[in-house]
Each structure stands twice: as C-alpha cells, then as structure tokens.
Amino acid sequence: MRYYTLLLVCCFSLITSFAQPFSKKDIQKDNNSLLWEISGKGLEKPSYLYGTFHLMCKDDIHISSNLKKAMSASEKLYLEMDLDDPANTVGALMFMNMKDGKTLREYYTPEAYARVKQFFLDSLKASLQMFERMKPSFVSAMLYPLMMPCKKISGVEEALMALAKTQSLPIEGLETIAFQSALFDAIPEADQANEMLNTIDSIDKYKIQFAEMLKTYQSQNLASIEASFSNEPGFEKSKSSLLDNRNINWVKQLKNIMEENPVFIGVGAGHLCGDAGLIALLKKEGYTLKAIVND
Image 1: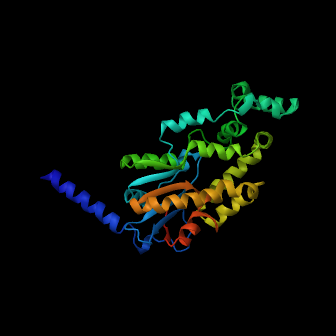
Image 2: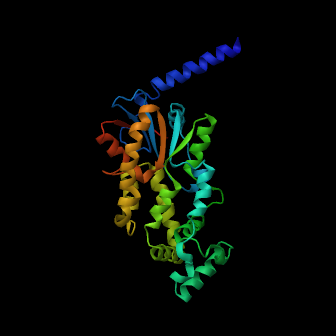
Image 3: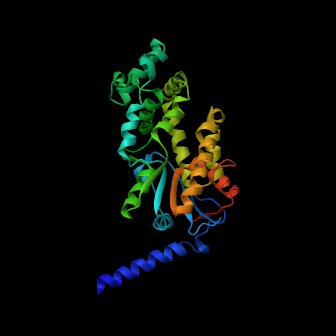
C-alpha cells in the first residue's frame, strides 16, 4: 500500500510541475538571469534555456532550486555537443592534429619557440614535444587551468549532466565534434599559434581577465556578459562563425525539438545575448521568453 501511495504522490508532483513549474514570484523582472522559460507558439509544455560557463572552479558552480525545477520539468537535456557520448571523445582525437605533418615549431621563431617550450616545462611540467603536432587551439586549452585559483576544475555542463542523470534524462547535442573542430580550422593555424604565445607571455594579465569574466557571468547580467566578450580583440571578425550563425542553426533545430518534448537547453552564456542571441531569435520566431529567478 505504501508503494502505490508513494507512486501516486510522485506522479501527481510530476504532473503539477509540468503544468505550472513556476509562479509569478519566480519571474525575474529585470531580466538579469541565466535561466529562461520558453513557451507559447503552440508548445504544450515550456522548455528552458540556460547560459553556461564552460570551465571554472568546481566550487564556483551553483545549481539553483529553480534550475533543478526546470530540469525536472524537462524530458531531455540538450548541450552544444553531447559530452556524454564516448564517440565525441574519440572524434576529438581524430581532429586534434594539424594537417600535412606540420608542427608547432614551424609557426615560431627559434626564440619564441624556446619561450613556449620553457613555459610548458615550468608551468605544466610537460614536454612541448608531446604536443608538437597538435593544433595550437587544442594546445592552448591546456593553459586555461593555469588561470584559475583552484585545483578542482569542472564546467557547468558537467553539473547539468550529473543532474540530468539523477532524473534519467537523455543527453543530446546540437552540434557534432566534426562541426566544432571545423570552427577552429577556419582560424589560420598561424593566428592560433600567435594567440597561444600571447597568452603565455601575458598569463598574469589573463588570470585577472578570467576572474573578471567569471564575476560578470555570476552577475547574470546579460548586457554585461555581452560587453565582456565584445571587447575582446578580434571578436567582431569571428562573431558570425562562433556565435551568430550557430544561433540561427540552433533555433532551426529547437523549433522541431521543443514541439516533440519539453527540453532543457544548456549553451554558453554568450549565445543568449544581444540582437542575434538565442533569446532575441526565439522571440522573433513568436515564442514567449521569461527570465526565471536563478539565485
């Protein structure tokens, strides 16, 4: 008898959360939130959009009660890429190396190469030779942990996946590893190498910038978040390929996805911002978007 009573209570709670997950008190009136409800345009149940930060100290990741509620009202988790699929890890290895047998040494003067080599020995306790054939953008990713004041590093996506698994939600991706690798391939390897050298030479400055970016993200003020990356050197040159075009493609997919099931969508916070951001594009498609309190 207790089992059936518990089952009925759980089912009733689930139905109630689907029907009215959020009340008026949950609406963030100033729109300063990373969590948004998507409704209208014939959707039987709302879906949810959340802005993530790809890499940060694990202790800085905050999962609010309303985020948990939104996840429980969803039937799938969509990320930029399905990070839970082992095929993507294997695929990353396939796209990691430069073509035509090129090496990092070819993109640096002897003096610059020596600086990079010494930096890897001193700061990463690793030999640069291990990464000699890797694309500079992939090698640069190894520098990000050096900008953080912690040893336990994670990402908001990992926390979302862990939460989804507690509810047995399927995890899907809006893009493939091949597509994301192509984005970096569009940036000349010489430019990637120069950027890596610039990061190494200015690592202390980048530590400060990274801390400021995290603080801005945690403020949940989308206008400030947009300003933080809009001021980055070379941003306008890559904005179309890294943000705008991807947003347009995602909206095309989401229109069909949200009709089938209520979903929770977690993508980089930069994709939510501005006139070409997901919030604005979804509104143009006729959906109603409401900022949800995410304390």
